[in-house]
Image 1: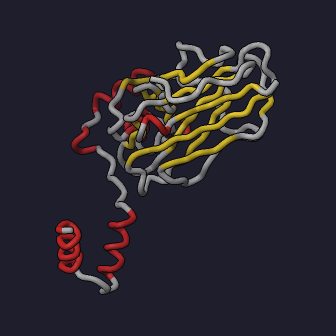
Image 2 (image 1 turned 90 degrees about the vertical axis):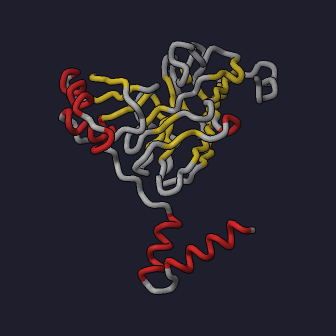
Image 3 (image 1 turned 60 degrees about the horizontal axis):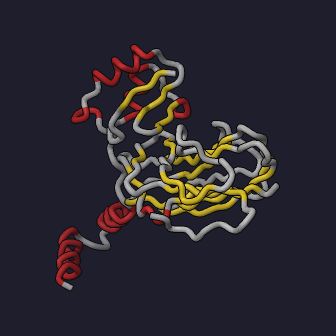
Length: 93
Length: 146
């Protein structure tokens, strides 16, 4: 099985996919190393070398609170200003 | 530093602990990095594979429990799983779906043979790395019943 030592903040599924493995069930992260089944060591090393953390980073999911704010904004229940004003009130307490 | 009281006499078991800060990349099954032995009375733990509990000779039935806590787990829908011999599919398994930032569970009685091993794995899908929370909360425990 191919493996690389890699920063856990990187988009590891993308690195594996670029090495030829798109099934995330074939990946395992253990003790700072990513193990990938079904690809060669050369392919995995190459995918890591080509990875650019600035461009290829995964997009974080919004928090439940951010999703709720967006829904309330869309439905016209609350405005951005009201959210900001409320935040300031809470911070002042 | 020890957090647990001493195990009872004739007790067969082991508890291991993972330090705060252990990292979990997004969308990759990750082995929880247990790294400290809380107590050990029957050779369940091996320093060469510190995150595992391995069944020694003389044990046929065990019970397992885990307690795990992660920081900033909102929106990450973590799954907490105990693997046996590198597989999540085993009778009486511990396996959560879309759980919360903290998870605590115990198995029923599990039949084992010498050499079987268990580890704890987490899959989270937040889009960014997540970390273990307080060291006090991250424990993997096994009790040999017979």
